[in-house]
Image (cartoon, rainbow over the protein chains, first blue to last red):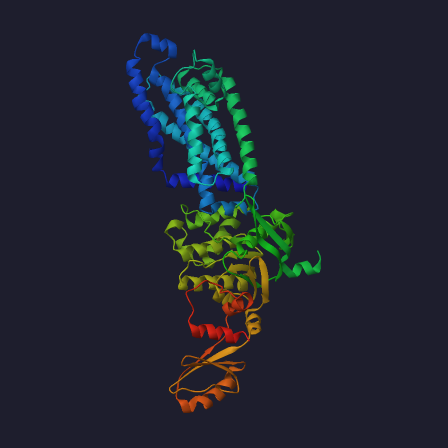
Length: 254
Length: 328
């Protein structure tokens, strides 16, 4: 397992050295929370709204924004495979006798821990805004963040390990996938009374389950039973990790 | 184990590699065969695009050949990839370091990727860094290193797991002359002190000449000559003595001689003997300058292919004639 540890160590070191960059990464979700969140929370400040949402809007939204941040950070971490391709470090990994699944898992685990930490920072910053957050749900929320990050990081690596060669191409594919996944997931609105076509997308969107589980942990409201969310996320993890390992094992220097 | 296997660090037989780019097929290697003895410093000399990097990528298991066979450190590079990987160190043409980690961290990760741990890992990393005189810079980020330091660090990294064969792809490309000389020293030291077999590619003839005990010249995917630098140069042949005189002088009859402007170009085999004759003959004409030009690997390449190893600016006439004379 030394190779796994090596790559985990590398991701953590790199993150720690560039810790200033965390600010730029959580800025976007934070802006959503502050402007979108407070904007809607002010206008939806009527008793009926709390009945629909099950809680106040900012408390409803914070778990969604945390899930979004975890998702984006984990998913975009796949780009490090492309950086490594471009800056040559990938060859160093490919020529080593270590099993490739190990170095890949080290990378995915490292990125998932980083994504979880960023979610935690966002939680702390958002706490003063969301007055009904259940703080005791934090351990469950951290677990949910980590479990969903695994699958999303694997998805990012999967895309980066396929024939994607440039940073720009990865960015384009990432945006094409990320935006619909975030919007369809119910991170910003409740999933009730959606039109059928919308609901189909929501149902197959992995983000839906990450958001739902996170909201159950921190706000005690949700759409699916919690166990269903967790099972969906674990199936997702296994599927994406298996595919990512397969793709990475095939990747060459060409 | 067969005894003859043990003698060679690298055995390559009829190696072919065809790249497909859409419908176009590019034959990068067209049947390459050679052997590298254990403990040898072996060089692959050729112009850019000759197939050097393709060969190294195949020998280091990163690319599969279209056909042919390659055995490195006793193992097949296609069928026994992992056995080969354990026994080789590689310094790639483009740097493969993590710039945002320190020198120590880069080697630490490498050691872990090769399964080392604990005290042994620490000792090996320290030894490797000290070997290339970078121990005192161990905590600096690689991004602050000069090109020469990075190369040395890569050599150190390739040594951490004590490989039998060290592959270096164009190890001094892009380095200034001083750093180049230093890198050469380290490569020699690795070979002599640790007994590691060296396989390097280069398009610098001086590098192949000074560093390698044996070289293969490769062009357009085929090996066109093989031997020690001396042997190869001897094949091309002769030394040329260039004489400039005050007054116009005729050609010396004892040797092959040609006039090029105000210069006389005399091709000779034994320089010392010939010089005595030449000086005696031209003394009456007032000798201004005598130069001796020995054949280089560049000339060998030119003789074999009709092209320069490195596309350089237009040659002057004298240089051209000197070349032509060497080839007789």
